[in-house]
Length: 259
Image (cartoon, rainbow, N blue to C red; front, side):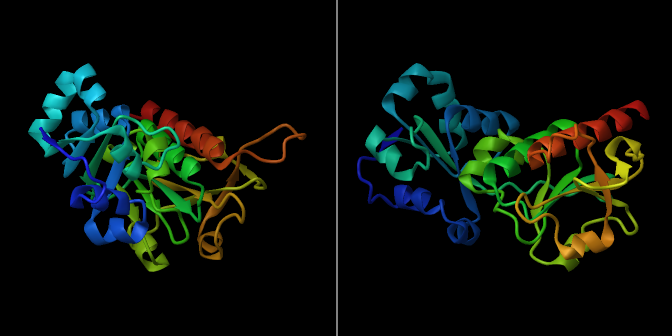
């Protein structure tokens, strides 16, 4: 295991750059922070570029350190150096640079989640985690969304990036092309005559969740049928991640019962 003691080391400088979207895109890499996320990616079989670990963590987790050494160059770094590449207020003792996950898309997705202008990284990550748990075939980030490989999204998703295909689509033409022709789109809305559990989710379909602040785009409103989650009259709306979880698991329940 090699040691890095300088913040000017090229590997440290590269890792620190990955906080910015343009550098992630330019290098095709993203940064994982924390033992749980790194270990999860390793267990799933994700490719690794480099990994950094502090001496206390290496001594406390020798099996993990050994596995990482087999997977990629592993560097021993002091906590102060790990702080240089960390986004978190209380940096963890391990971080890894990995190629941006790009799982193959299914030939004909029967159940998709589309995020339309969702910009909060915590909500986006939670929705990715929920989509993976609910068995979505793919998650599409339509124009105006947060970058799914942002560090906050990665941490909130808890490994979902390595379990469900994700695509960032820069144009609406690319969004429509990623969906089977004629597949129904159901847009979650606070006001809709159709309730989410009245939809036949066992048929191929896609659920759309719009921006927390501004709602769905005009492009999506023109194409999608709106569905609502019924709520007590005193409640104005649900958080987008909560609404998404309710709908995704209802769809999963219906799909499971028709297998």
